[in-house]
Amino acid sequence: MFGFSDETYIDIASGNGGHGCVSFRREKFVPKGGPDGGDGGRGGDVVFVVKDNLRTLGHLKIQRSFRAENGRPGQGARCAGRDGRDVEIPVPRGTVIRNAETGELIKDLTGLDRYVFLEGGRGGLGNWHFRTAVRQTPRFAQPGGKGTEMRVGLELQIIADIGLVGFPNAGKSSLINLYTNARSKVAGYPFTTKIPVLGVLREGDQDVVIADIPGIIEGASEGSGMGYRFLRHISRTKGLCYLVDLSDDRYLEGFDILSSELSKYSEELGSKKSIIVGTKIDEPGTEERFEELRRKYSDKKVLPLSIYRDDLIEALRHELFRLSEGGKAEENGGFTARMDTDAYYRDEA
Ligand SMILES: Nc1nc2c(ncn2[C@@H]2O[C@H](COP(=O)(O)OP(=O)(O)OP(=O)(O)O)[C@@H](O)[C@H]2O)c(=O)[nH]1
Ligand SMILES: [Mg+2]
Image (tube, rainbow, N blue to C red; front, side, top):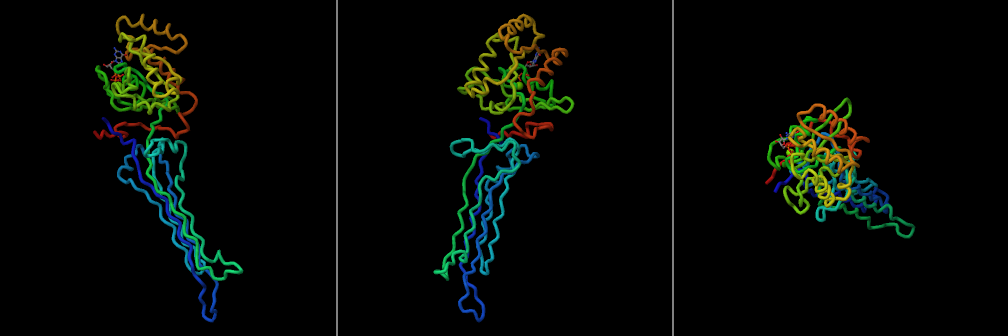
């Protein structure tokens, strides 16, 4: 099993409000000064701050506990207590907050810069607020409101525009290496890719982020192969590129098997806008197989690819841009820099 630094939990607490103060004015020659106890300060908030320079949640495995300051109590002479300082938790863009026990989504921070997650307790009112005509000497004040403590789960969802989906060995990593700055490991055996790899396809000022994920096999939804926990990395893409190895005898069923595995993970993912790429068309007998594939899916875009054919590489490049059209995935700030996935993941096994 792999563990990833893109999931963690933290303990957070907003500050308690300061208590209101009970105090009476004391002046020489004024025997019965009125109440003058000041208000307590507000407790500090717990605030998530999205930082574009952060790429992982690794720093939150070192510091796990974040506590905002308590508000100070009020003082005599109607002096209000100071408000507690907020605590800020820096997170990379694409972070979502989950219930630590149930895993239920609480808040998606994508598209936000700051988010006040827990408010501090309110400050208590000092006793001078409670003076009335019949109660000249209120010997009480309001206690401060309690802050909130909780444990939350955090998850970093890498946001790519296009996800590559295919059986092991279909040529996904070869494809991402062709078009982007990624250097995903390529080898002639299944499950070469064990962690998702991102790469940026760039033309002019347009960036398209492509995600290469481990191969999916039939039964992945039941845990076969590498399982399908990687699918969340492509769950927010704008389109999927299915790779079907034309030199593999399952070239006609491949797409159906893959999209049905994806649908078991999420209906939405399974029915996402997609194209099919028939790979390794330089292998003998694959031209005919490709035509068969194209006929079977006549309602979809089906393109051929060989890493040795510049004309096909060029044609697919345009199709990848088209697949990603319509702005960035979600409203994220975009990963424009080179992404090195070794920095994203740490194998904790
Ligand atoms: N002949 C030919 N071989 C290819 C082509 N594309 C990829 N291959 C070979 O197919 C094998 C698998 O390629 P990868 O890119 O590692 O495949 P993958 O889909 O990333 O595989 P996993 O990471 O294991 O899921 C390697 O030996 C590649 O050299 C192609 O266009 N033509
Ligand atoms: Mg691979």
